[in-house]
Amino acid sequence: MSKKKSTLPPGSLRHAAAYATAAGAAMAVTAPAQAAIHWSGPKDLVVNRDHTPVAVDLNGDGIGDFSFVHYGTVYSKYYGTNTTLFFTNQLMGLTGNTGNSAVGSTHYPVPYRLQQGDMVSQGMAGAWTYYGYLAAGVFYRIHTAGTYTYTTSYRVGNFINQEGFLGVRFQIDGNTHYGWIAFEGTWDPPGWSEGRIAGWAYEDVPGKSIAAGDQGPVIPPIPTLNEWGMIFLAALIVASGAHLLKNRREEI
Image 1 (cartoon, rainbow, N blue to C red):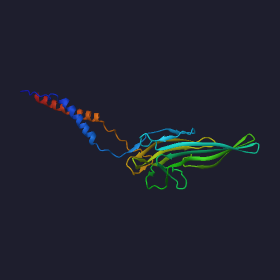
Image 2 (image 1 turned 90 degrees about the vertical axis):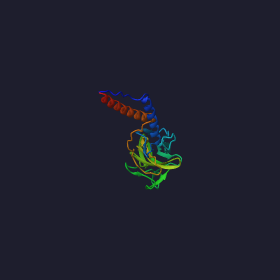
Image 3 (image 1 turned 180 degrees about the vertical axis):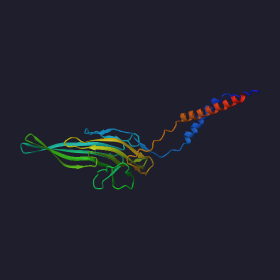
Image 4 (image 1 turned 135 degrees about the vertical axis):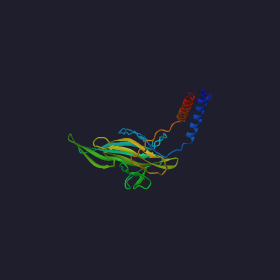
């Protein structure tokens, strides 16, 4: 039986690699962009009593969209000889930058504490405000003849020893996007209030609503240009190997 000599064309693998790179480039250019929810990943940002603002940059462009800060003012009054009255005013608040705002009460600038799954959208009930109180209040301490008495006069805010989500809207290139910020506040007179930001997310389609706490689907990363090339090259090598094996079997 005559044997048929069969080999791959000279330089075929080199040509395959070049083709794979070109094909990968075409795939990378023509791959459609998909709308998505962008999640920050888990965070642990503390807003404490040192009055340092904590910025939240929802879309990662290096510009803070919201600032969280704690204010605390202590002053005193004196009554008589043996009595001193100390007032402590505590305020945990947020401010939206460049017109960004959070949704809350229509009577006071107090943001809502949303639950998991509550929708954040243009038509949701409430008022959008660029600043708001998260955990605020005043308590006073009476010092009389060596004895201290603590009394709370008022407390305001939906995040007083509670955790939940802030519904927010902000601007990207003049378009309104909706998102959420996970926040937990503490306020326990005569101690100092603190807050903790656990993460945030936003919808990258302008005007599209988002559910509080929605982190979006887990999407596998899109291969890079080089990775696309390697995928095509591997496929061509496998195909070439199968072709060569078939020819060798025919020769036997």
